[in-house]
Length: 333
Image (tube, rainbow, N blue to C red; front, side):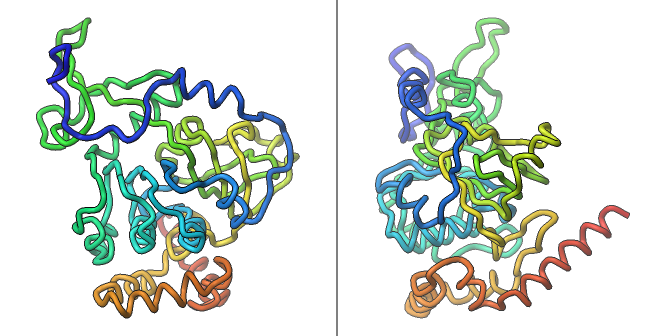
């Protein structure tokens, strides 16, 4: 019970929901329309720090910033907080690098129909990670609150569930209807990485397919790193302004990383490499073999392009592009 008599979950709140304190940071953030392009390694080095609270864009295996996750491991980031929001392969990678020590859980450990990650399960069951439970919708509500500049978002989910008991939400009586509501505290990540289809050099971004909460994530986060499949001209952006999902003034860095979600699925671009994802899951069963696998594929690769070359190269990527286009064509018929 809270001091004012409202029921409260027993989970720890890992971030400050105060919009006025967040606004102090945003007030100092540059909104200049300047060239923000840089190598991914420089963006991670400049805008991501040990101990920061990290959030990633994408939905499940779709449009996740996998190249950025690899770079986070190469740079040895640690003691971070994490928004476990519809995470699959990216969570598996961050567990392999022991990047975070506290996590807001919506969906983690599982790779959907592919099965459970042995590496992620070992890391979470070891007991060194603080966990507060939510649902995927609850995390979306928290980001929406931050994007709106309010300290919480009322909702009707989690009520009467064990998830509420392990959350940091607060139960209240609606002053208008008298019915129960759950208050989800605003979530202001220190840094977010969002992989998009297209961006110009300033950070005006286009996303195709499922959006999840990435528009709110960009507005809620103090620093935003964009990785994109390709750079396009600002003239092209201006020809169809309604397609701009994330505007430039929210963005700190733009990194062109073609196939940046490999081995995941990039809607309308390339299908997921199911064979390689199964290889990850299988080799994780042996921690010694998995360390060698990580060394070869991530730590000994200077960038994402070299990782792709080690796992089929352009021939594989063109085949995955063909699969995605075929599936899209069949779905449209």
